[in-house]
Amino acid sequence: MVTVVNRLDRTVRHPEKAHRADTETVRKPDWIRVKAPTSPVWRQTRDVVRENGLVTVCEEAGCPNIGECWSKKHATFMIMGDTCTRACAFCNVRTGLPQPLDPAEPAKVGDAVKTLGLEHVVVTSVDRDDLADGGANHIAETIRAIRERTPGTTIEVLTPDFLRKPGALEAVVAARPDVFNHNLETVPSRYLTVRPGARYYHSLRLLDQVKMIDPTLFTKSGIMVGLGETRNEVLQLMDDLRAADVDFITIGQYLQPSRKHHPVIEYVTPQAFKAYETIAYAKGFLMVSASPLTRSSYHAGDDFVRLRAARLAQQPTRTVERDAAL
Ligand code: SF4
Image (cartoon, rainbow, N blue to C red; front, side, top):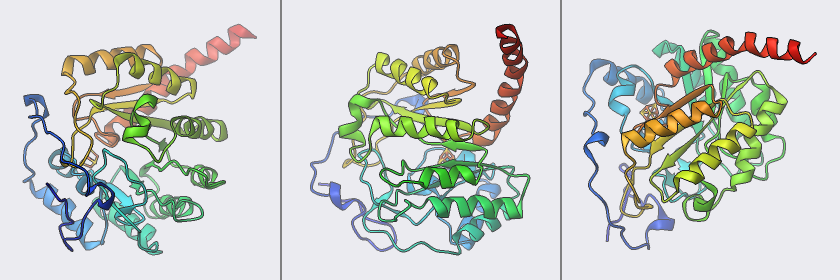
């Protein structure tokens, strides 16, 4: 039996999964292979992360894109500690009882963004069900700290679902990130197995509410495929997201972090990803990223520029449609 332990303190990384039987692993297809990180810029990014005592989801989730992203100074900061209060079957982030929040963390993230000279930054977090506001005010503080130091940097937050935390969502929206991202992760039929602590319709409603509170924000959501979902379920999920006026969808291949995690049911072919992309654009998303290595934050800076351009390009059409209706 495999036991996954934390690198530094050798404690069990996912206690809730430790008793489970090991699952079979399937050899990755050629289209999943990535290069090992080596570049000097990759090293510089790593040094800034270490020097500021920051945590990144790139490392915690074992993301396959770390070589490419960090070589472009693109790291996704994971705030509110390295320990999550949920225990999703797909996720490699350590689980357990988290430490208290670090009040200096928003400033440290702001300083790192400034040092790296980032034009666009993605900030995500662990789930903090132990906090009364789910950590919403800490996320809002972090947005403000970045704005103070580098007002030109566009900010994308990838938030938890704030389940049963009244007022939390509103606090984050009030801090006015440029992009509000919340991942559905998978189709509703897979929730009980893949994301048991969350509720599909709650997550969908959260995205809908963001747009209702502030229609100028961009909303974004992502899923993994290869978890046993059907194609029709993915298409229905796209319709659900469009009904909530979500602008940007990301679709990537699920990769199994360890033999204790949910197995990969299928490696979806690049052609099938291309078909998802075509359908998603036809359904009205402003921006679509669908490929085996797509992650919510993959190429987020370049995609934000395209997202903004797509909205601008749509505006004259919207005005004409409105005028015609009058
Ligand atoms: S895709 Fe996102 S999580 Fe993965 S390395 Fe790039 S920035 Fe980090």
